[in-house]
Image 1 (cartoon, helix red, strand yellow):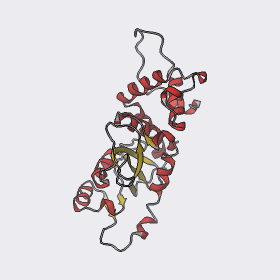
Image 2: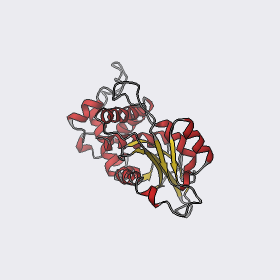
Image 3: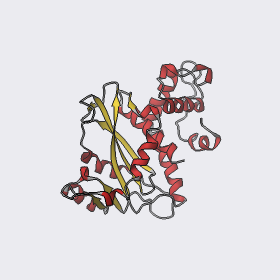
Image 4: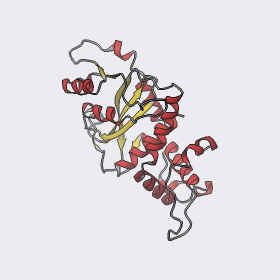
Length: 255
């Protein structure tokens, strides 16, 4: 659950509840955080949140999730924890790794499409960029039929600027590693224009094992991300809610 150390980081981030808001007194923010974390870890539905744990109703936690998503709370918490790691010298900016992973989708909505690896059933993709240590920097979800190559620049541009050290905040890794699915002249040109060295396997090369020896960390990060059972299946019809939960999971991995 939300321990005191984590809550000290989270508490200043959510917007204050209006003092004269109509209706009953809202559930305490910390209890709602615990309800959201319980759902994220266990994969339970909002209706199945056990009321005896004091989280309030599932509807209360879901409404608070929507409100905090609109305010960018989860991205800010993730960015805060990344800045702490950067200040401690634990972000490896020498290289970043990108990859994608398929998950099932039980409902429709944005970010859902026919999966090419699951007989055309509804699915989504998690697109991830991590540093050389496997620290998740950004994760986004798209439909299962979206090519990986279309999201590499979105991920590179989505890395937050981290003001953890003296000087200008850093947001660009020195190099970016990817498999053959990201092989494109345009991608290489765009990355070079961003002063990022593209280290991407070419489709014509006979094997990519040497590159796999240094980009395995992204697979480890996916394994950590998918330990959160709510993310192993795409349930949310609203894509921004699923992305918010993914950002929260990344923040917890950064602890």
